[in-house]
Each structure stands twice: as structure tokens, then as C-alpha cells.
Length: 431
Image 1 (cartoon, rainbow, N blue to C red):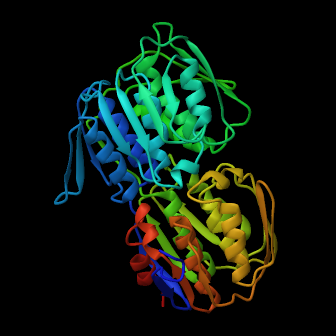
Image 2: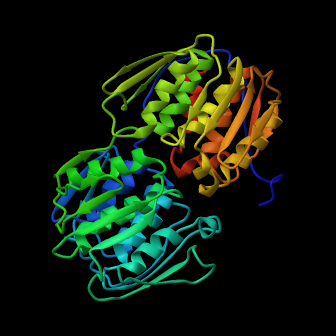
Image 3: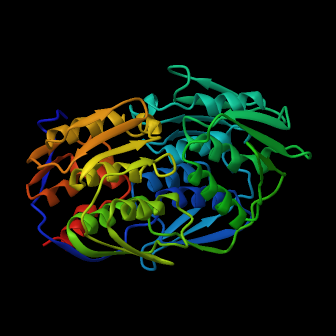
């Protein structure tokens, strides 16, 4: 479909916003929980699971691997029958869409599952790197071939024998999902001596790795973390019986930003100070910019106040940092967001996309390899926003309507990746 032919949703000018909202379940927790439940020894009951494209991709992949996954719409739970670390089907062709939270961990887990598996996705997934993870898996003895460009899906995984080493190195700078995937596979493939994972260089998006460790521990596997490395002992994942998935902190950022720039109070339920998600720190970023923010264990509330620019290292909150780029339109001074190099390998090159669309709104923007600067406040101009098949572009740029002009969002259905009813929830809060 051409850009001009894509459907358009107009977000009318937002004069004031207030109310309460509960975002859908965390994508990152949901897909990790689904995989760990599948690998565990018994049945797991998941409540609050995200119902969106990325989790559908993971569920269908697990079913293709022979795992029984039952979704009960009536009581909102999903039941996963664990396969005790051994997938029933030894051959499968998996289409993982554009879900990095499915592609990366499944590649790691399947590398030593004694089967022949092909992993592919949409065109953009074939542009998203996976070479660092594959290199580490090969160093352990995995037999993996790139069927297209080196370092990118599609992947062909073939059966191998025992793991070749009790130590492996992996680069941490490109994507934390590589480290998370290797960690989740490690208890199943470790030799009796265990597996030491050495992280080379900086570890980007570290809170997502900490989330992985927390969920692994919930499923009975504790990882010892040292300086620049992880030590994993061989173990069988054990089902906790039931797990309630938190509301998505990245999705919460849109509504917290809305409260900060359009009056408020806006209260987000289902995620708060007790969260295991790194993006909950977006609340602190808003406080730093001057917004009135309060947190409880499972809720966060934001109200407007005069906003000032901030210079922020966003390496720990890369997804929520996109929301901060739009908030910067309403802040006095130059907001500088750094540590966002991982944006370039997401659903689109987000640094280029965010800069382009902010300029359409009338903003003065500068950007580099891992940073972006926005001068504010900006007199927001009416604009048609291209979303690049990226759910977060659609959601964060919808907030620009708080500048008093209509915002026309092209291809709005891309939000189905993580938040299918986002625009309906936004409308409920806006007046």
C-alpha cells in the first residue's frame, strides 16, 4: 500500500485530559512468560497477558512447536502446558512477524533443541540484526545458517550434539534481547559445570535483562550475576502455577505524558513503583522536567506544571524515550536525549523517523548516531504523521494534538502490535 493510500486517523486538538486508564499487559513480560511457561515442568496460568500481534506471534510459534496454549476469553487467562524443556515437534517453519521478543529468545532456545527449525519474519525483521546472538550460539556448537544476508533473519537451525563449551561471550551494545535470549536458553543447555556468559562492552537496555532474570527466578532458576558476566547452572524451569502480568510501562508513558502536557490528572493503573519494568523510570523523567507525578505500588499519576528541558541518558528507557521526544515540544529550552542508539534497529530507524516527524510539527531538531535534541516550546503545526509500520510512532505522536491542532496519523492500525485499542483509550481521557 502506498503512503497516500494508507488509512488516516485524525486526533482532534486536545484541550484537557484527565481520568484513569489501565494499559494492556507488558509485551516484554508477556512473551518472556509465555516462553518460560512452555519450557517449564507443569502448567502455568497467565492472567493479564497482552492480547496483540507480538504475543499472537509467540503463541502461534509455541503451538507450531507442539506446546498446548489455551486462551480463555471469558476469564481473561491463558493456560500454557509446559513441555519440560523439550519441544514435542522437531521440525517447524516459524513466521515471527516483527516481534523481536519472539525471534531472539526462540533462536537461542531452539539452537540446542535437537530439531530443524526455520525462523523468519516480515521485511523489517530481515533488516534487524541477530548476528551477535548467532555468533555466540555457534561458539557453543550450534548449527545455524543465515539464509539471506549475513547477520540477519531468516535463520535455519539444524540439530547438534552437546554444547561445546561452558563459557561464551556476547556483545551487549546492540540489543539486550540477545543477552536475554541466551540467558533463557542457558539453564537447558549448560554443562554440569554450568555456563558462564561474558558480556562484552556496554549492556544496552539493562533493565530488560534484569526483567529476564526476575522472571527466570520466578520460574525457579536463579542466575548469579558478576561484574560483566552471568553464571547459570543447569536447571529445569518450574512453573509458579500462576502469574499476573503487569500493565505495560512503555504504553503507560503515553498517558503519563498526556497528563503532564494536557492538564491531568491522568492515573495509570496496573504498574507503579513495585514494577519490574525499566520504563517505569519515565515517571522520574517527567518529574525532572517539572511535571507533578505521584507513584503507588501499582499506579502512577501525572499532572501538568510548567515544563523545562532536560539532558537525559535514556539507555535504560529506550522505548519510553520516544514519548519524551514529544513532551520536549512543550518544554522550555533544549531537551537532549542520549543513549538511544538502539532506536536504529527497532521496528524502524527511530532516530531518523522521530526527527523527520518532529520537523513536520514545526520543531527545531538535531540528531546524531545515538542522540536527539529538540528545541522547545514549539508552536505545534497541524501535520500528517507517517508511522513507518511502528506502533510507538503512532502512539507518541498522537500526543502532539495537545498543542492545539489536529494530528493526522497515517496507518493507525500499526498500534495492534502492542495496544490495539490505544486510540479509543486516548479518546476517553481527552476533552
